[in-house]
Amino acid sequence: MGLWVVSKRKFNVVKLKFLLENAVSTRIVNSALEKEPNGKTKLENALDSYGENSNLSFIERTKLIPITKVLDIIRRGFNREEKAFKQDLEDPTIRKVILNSFRSLQKYGLELPQTFAMPMMVVWNYTNDCNLRCKHCYQNAGDIGSKRNELTTEEKFKVIDDIASNDIPTIFFSGGEPVIRKDFWDIARYAKEKGLYLSIASNGTLFTKENAKKAKDIGFGYIALSLDASTPEKHDEFRGVPGMWNRSVQGIRNCIEAGITTCIQYTFSRDNADELPKMFELREKLGAYKVIVYNYIPVGRGGFENDPTPEQREEACKVMYDELEAGHQVVASTAPQLGRYCKQHDADSVIISHYAEAKSKELGIIAEIVGGCGAGRAYCAIQPDGKVTPCVYMPDLVVGDLRKQSFKEIWEESPVMISLRDRSDLQGRCATCEYKALCGGCRARAYAYFGDLKGADPGCIFNREYYYEFMRANHRKHKTLEREVVKQQVV
Ligand code: SF4
Ligand code: SF4
Image (cartoon, rainbow, N blue to C red; front, side, top):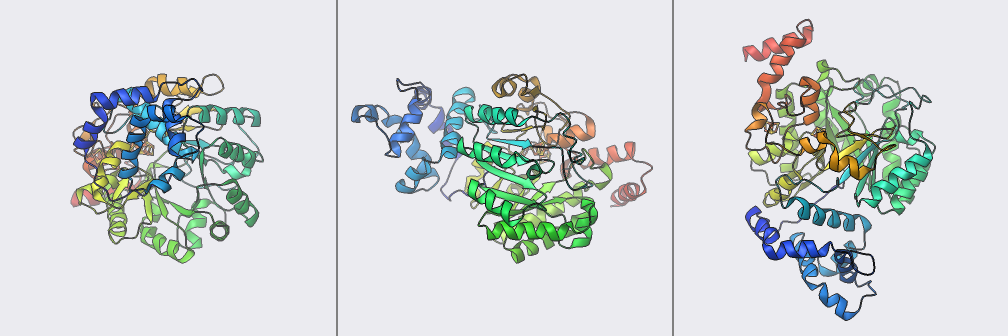
């Protein structure tokens, strides 16, 4: 989950399809993935030779020219100077991204959205243990010391081996609170040695100066620490333990001071919806890199009553859009509708799925390739006991078990994962929506509300009738919701 910023160079889907799907390109992609006598693919050799760190002979390098030309197209697309690009290619994470992209093209051709041969990112819910008791925890975490059949340290090393051997580029540690586990730093260091890009979601309370330094030394790409409000009262009420806002803010300060890219992660819910603009102010005051706005989903301890209405979510999209349009590249969001909102309003910036923004609308094609909801298609989650789920917000939808199966087998063969890659049978307005490639609706929300992975995403303004119908049917007795429903009917 890198925070990608891409250049202003024009991409156009027809041109891109022409470039990537003609007979010559197909031959180049196929040939690039053939193994050479030195045990590497031609693509890997081309990456080595492009970086001028190769032991290949002149003749061998000449054979790699067609692949090198493709790399040149990528370089120009991202507006990188040749020297800088050579350095980029020495980064194992970038090499994994390129290898995964070639394999995806070979397997599926160019798609909108793209199905990836392997996920571009895995979120590992490292433990169920946590020192806080947040109201909205999707993982229902807590119970320090309970372990609940979690992977042993030895098994965790094997998980890293499995992930790294499949050229998955990025791993995002989440929880529970990952830092609580004694083996966390050893596992993270090992993952880094294996060439993975690392990031972590933490409640921030354990990010002492010492831990911030450890993260810096290991080489974490970025750290996202939670704050649910700009002031202590509301945050501590959410988090269930007094004094935690101050500790999390101190954690943010420690990470910034240690020189790590530090984000504030904020879960936008009904109770703290008014805090969103204030979070941008707080980001500025603290000197954090971005505010990552998490899209509240009613799973785990998060109840339906605290889910923002579609109108509130649309308003939040507007606030984030305005921030981006003002030129403040300080926001990323897990609400796939933000991509739709930006495109609908012809924004100058384009949101690339959950992760980043591009500073040019001409790069909308990248957003459509990455494609909004990535569950089971571009990303998946690993649970503390080694079970695999399509998304962290589907903690009970187990599609495989790393104690018994390889990651590759689960990714390639799970019927649920395969089904999630197909958007042709979505329901509600998502079925016919012109922004389907860019967004696709949050499948976890559809599943939480309707038990249907292909259901309408009731968090989207386009699907508001599904939201209110659900609320009427299921929460008649809940006064707050009833009032909300009545208000919406009056409007
Ligand atoms: S289901 Fe999709 S949109 Fe929803 S949180 Fe997961 S990846 Fe994001
Ligand atoms: S209708 Fe569905 S696909 Fe379209 S913007 Fe809304 S959630 Fe996304």
